[in-house]
Length: 254
Image (tube, rainbow, N blue to C red):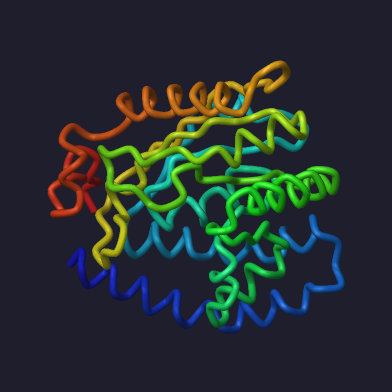
């Protein structure tokens, strides 16, 4: 039944995405913040489908840490789930992402309307300049910025190399950093169709003021908080998620 529900969710998402992409294109004349609110309804429907069909819910710890002014969210990256849920958890925001994602039919078109910071990861220091220049612009427009320092989805229980881009932007813009940990990969894993029922935990840390800090120092501080928090919220033996052995601890009766 888990596999059948997962297939049904995927099929529903495939039906939902093309018409919503057309709606996203029609939002082009709207201000960025209003455009985000319209387009993010797609993620709201997707999360509802995920809850109803797959039994995946989520809880958020540390909502009180979300500041009133735009900040830079540096988050653990395990799943496609966080790209959906963050649209409902945090204020209007943009992502730093691979430029190639904007070429994906329908989904990429919708993403383009959200004015992401699209970079060429192989561009080195030029990519850092793109993140800094475009990041400052988005922050001035009242948009938050979401960056996954590990760059790619990492299997639960593992840690990827934390890139310097998010910390670099924070120290060069003065925006606060909000560290975020979650265990979404235990339920919606990387490159797997099966989605396990249960409750995802999202933990938001206290904002970090980058004033007086070097990018490397800030990056280390963010990584230390996230990885320490991961030890508190992930299931024992989380590194076995790839073989489908994780999730029972959080599984719901559904």
